[in-house]
Length: 148
Image (tube, rainbow, N blue to C red; front, side, top):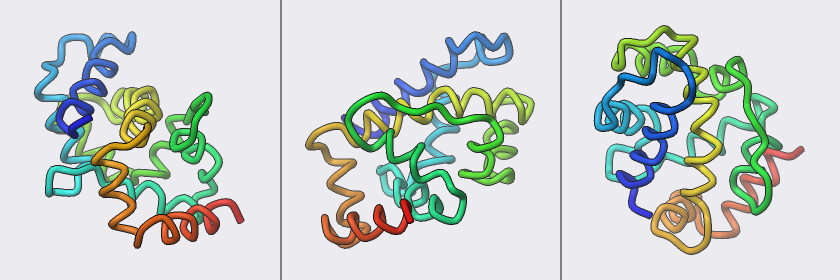
């Protein structure tokens, strides 16, 4: 799945997440804000950001469930803020005219599915991530550090 298609799936999830603040938002606006938040600036998903910061934040098990097969573990508003940083949440919220709480809630709902879909099976986004971390052995080394 291409990044923009993936971001539109995430945008649709955010738009329909049950929060009145996100219901009226435009799918393209949400997609662009998500791209600014999680994109790598070259048309790909910056999964390295998620994976590399996990060991220091204690969120390895949660995000690891998104990368693997099986059920995706949920992430709280506080944990998503820790994972992405309050400055990025604030920027995402500002871009969409949301409160930081609504933005963090929307991201907590959508990120597990976005990362799960980005890494499912053989695909360009997962292949790109592997290239960024030095291939399968680099990915395994990074994952090993997450779960220490």
